[in-house]
Image 1 (spheres, rainbow, N blue to C red):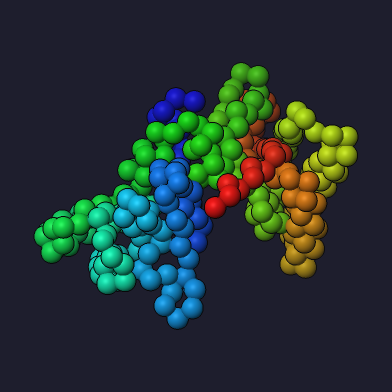
Image 2: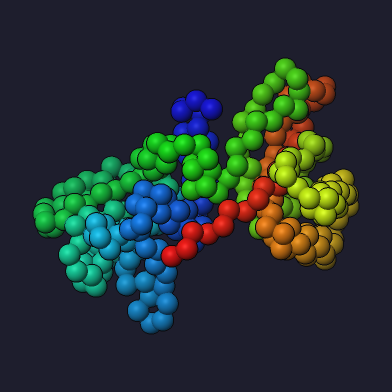
Length: 281
């Protein structure tokens, strides 16, 4: 995939993230940017996260990750000041303080950082990485690492022989994640699975995919009942847990039928991959 297309897809994924999902993504980025030095941090107890969403103990780089998409200017400025002041109060020898957000900050916020915060903290490098900067930094890595950072798989879909689409497939962790894909899709592509599957794994994958397709085909009827949707999602939860127990993960998304039929319809795409083992800390 060319760099420009990859950057646009990464920006689109970053824009979707909120709250803890954005912080988790920034942790994965930190681990790749600073191998062997980055330490994720989460809130616990009355002191919270001590105004530190992750840091590098050796390089003394501290991160503040906050999804600001659609947030009011005053709140963003207050959040940046509070996080910076809190970090400097709680931690020693801060050399770089880096604010990460999935938005392009308004000029008033950028001016606030440059005219007020930086002059008051000249011994610290204060950086703001917005949407464009984050996407560019992420896209400096090979595509497989990019997929790991934003937790998607970019699949080349060919619903029509004359069309090629690059579709971001999201890591599906629950029935709640998969149901919106099943409920909007009118068809599906043949699923993709690892080449080295055992017969038992093939049977497990075949059964799971067939169940997903069955739910897709009757999703209109299921959505007439709230309890029906809940039952479907719980059943999907069980299937995903069965896959996880064998070290397998589901990635899914929707493509476009292109010119395959007389009208364009969304097509569900399923890809089973082997889950990467976490690196020992």
